[in-house]
Amino acid sequence: MNTGTWTECEHKNFLLGLSIYGRGKWKKIAIKFVKTRNATQVASHAQKYMKKRRFVKPIPRHPGPDWHCNIKAMGLI
Image 1 (cartoon, rainbow, N blue to C red):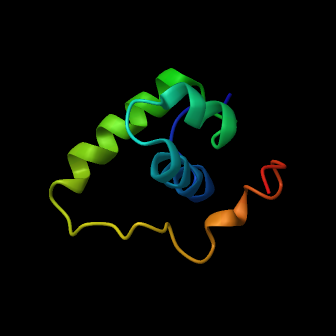
Image 2 (cartoon, rainbow, N blue to C red; image 1 turned 30 degrees about the vertical axis):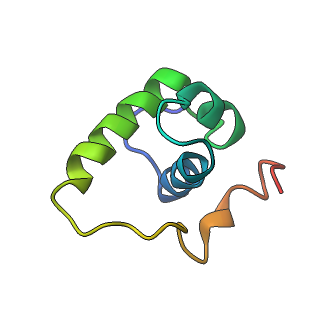
């Protein structure tokens, strides 16, 4: 498991998992999308992300063109 600052790929994978499973499914997101973090770390990241998001413009539904940066390597696609 990684600790400390989340990488760009981890965060994009988190966003993808969040778009598929929704809020509260941290264990599923950790297992399927952010394999380098555990469910507690994903939940903590989500809490900080949601708090920060209140102060910035809304994020589009799709995480962006390079969302797959780590997904393919992890065997999810």
